Length: 279
Image 1 (cartoon, rainbow, N blue to C red):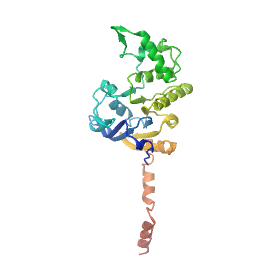
Image 2 (cartoon, rainbow, N blue to C red):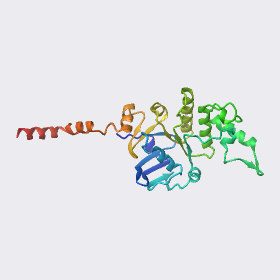
Image 3 (tube, one colour):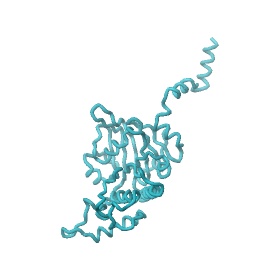
Image 4 (spheres, one colour):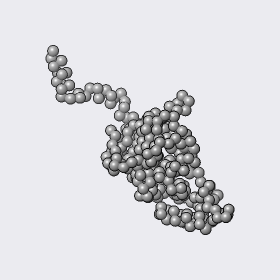
């Protein structure tokens, strides 16, 4: 069963994939993937290990190029050859390892590689001011922008990584397992942050294994199974059990196939079988 949110169908997606496939030698990692992400919505990308989630994120981040199909950003077809190209286009990616420098403070991490220079000299005052402005917009709970990242909690580190992704004013943010290994309070902090990204009008593609997190913040759920689409569901209209069934393939097994084959499709079919039996 595939459900689309009504609001999503009334506007153009910021990101649209059609028939995207990717192979690594003899391994078919992705096959005919279709996916839309609209401005101001959170789409959760879920699936079992090996379903192709990480490969898809790396294609969108510019780490890999897709072999077949089309990838459109704001309606224009693109082929991403590098992370720099992906970032310049407006796609920000926060990988699970966060890629933060523990020995540097929050300001240095936020502007790493994008330092503000005046006369060839770092403008520490302006970077600090912009850091506070961004963190306030996200209602982030960071005690000081001059504290080393090593001294922050897991949730605060995730906040810094997400805030850094917003420095380039992206249109869409890709989050790879942002609540993995976080406690309850830290998870709540990150989920609140994801909702603020949506409120800013950004498209958010969230990879998560935690169905409670998905149901808490996602608008739609896209399921991958063995490198293929296995359903796109509206969170408000789908049950937890249906999502798990799509992830595990529980609806596609010998028992259900035999039951479906034995179930009459219509009254006419029943009548035909009865008449045939009478003859």
